[in-house]
Length: 126
Image (cartoon, rainbow, N blue to C red):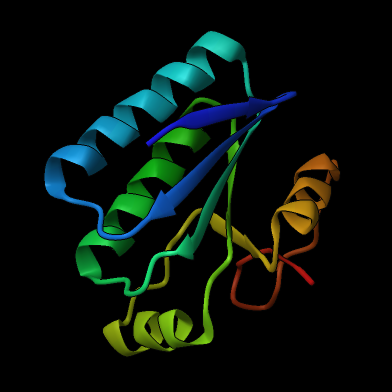
């Protein structure tokens, strides 16, 4: 999966299923790119993902945690309603991930210096 650089933000677009080896490589790639580029934000676009299982949910949370340790915020975009329902049914809260409807709104969210959180602690750009 390519990790694109957009100014101080990394953009990752997930397509199809993410297998174990690919997911681990993606985590490493993102961490190395943050450290090497000084990026302060990561946008993960999951609009090309049909289903999110507990494995992918855990990977997304781990990517956000790693990015956070490197002083970068992670925003998840492109979530389909069926995927959101599945995440709720699985009980996955995806800590450390902010959400936005699309890439433009994610960029706006990352550009803000301080963003109020929703009552559940997750940030949202609508």
